[in-house]
Image (cartoon, rainbow, N blue to C red; front, side, top):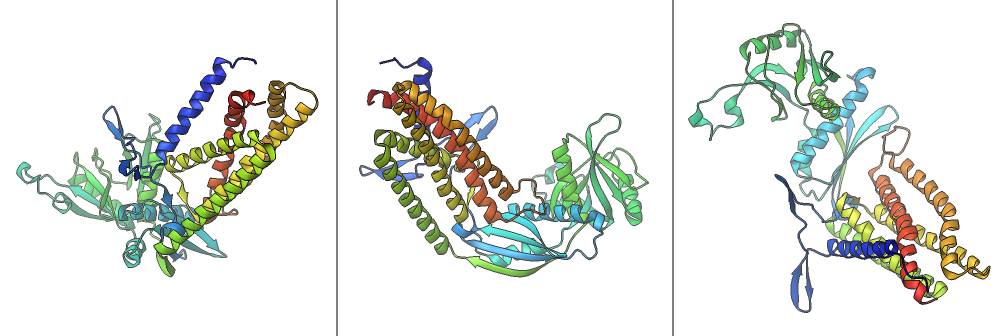
Length: 447
């Protein structure tokens, strides 16, 4: 018997260790074992001054967690064609920010086109007060430029936002556009502001009144930024400079444009999904998954014996890895997403079947076991790669990562696509790396 290489053994121990970590991550927060209540270990840690507290709970979408789905019609008749794309993106950004303030972390906001009209679709898992959500989302963005006034030190502790801000009269209706652009001299990213005629006069007065002081830019009663006025600006053209990169400059521009280009929206449809229905869907999905896994395990063991049993171990590791990634990324699970996971299980098993059939062919041709196994994996790889690459491409089209208008933008379809793509990638890893290593270590003693 050929001794195992150090590399093979190290990989085997790594797989075992990774499996144990994933097993611990997927334990419930608390559980009972031998009459004692145990708790899942905490994975909190400190990195310098930062304290990392990962949330390991599974996230569920609207159809599983229950909640509200709202459809708004967007009024675009007063928006020019050239600014429509920016206005829609600003609206979407602003609504997402409001929802985050509302405390809904797994929401989905999308814009769909219906012939010549546009609709804003908002899904709010876990929200029970639909009226409050509608009120929060439906209001027009409020952008103001407020001067920051000095207050006595003894009043600092009890001062509110209203105590330190003074209205300059300048608001979102005076802002023509905010745009990220590099400084022509230094190349550093800045956000340029352009005001209309009335806004130019108000901005000149504000920069005189608050020269060498700060003006706060307030969106929906939240301070977005508070730059220092360095000079009087009479022409209505200003820049906000600071420690910006391209991403943060674009984000600030989108926030400002959300107030400068308000698009009114009208609620045209709403419905609520009860948590009981969501729980029932989860239970049925789990039951379907377990039945599917059980039937696959019986087929593999019945058809391939000990090899099939090893592939079932690989399948168990595959499931743990997948659920761990769902928790860490995190992935918002919907019922179609569970279907995508179950489908990817079949794809993972398909890889093992291709490998085992190639292995049997090599053994029938008189190859020694170790040689037949390596050749079986190598020659099955081309088929595995091509089949899974095609499915991944299809999944990317469904996911539509670049938000192309001519492709799908449904959150439900995207949920299916993301779990399918993740499952296929992890399935390739477990089939070609994990199962191969398990065969090298465990099957050699049996055959």
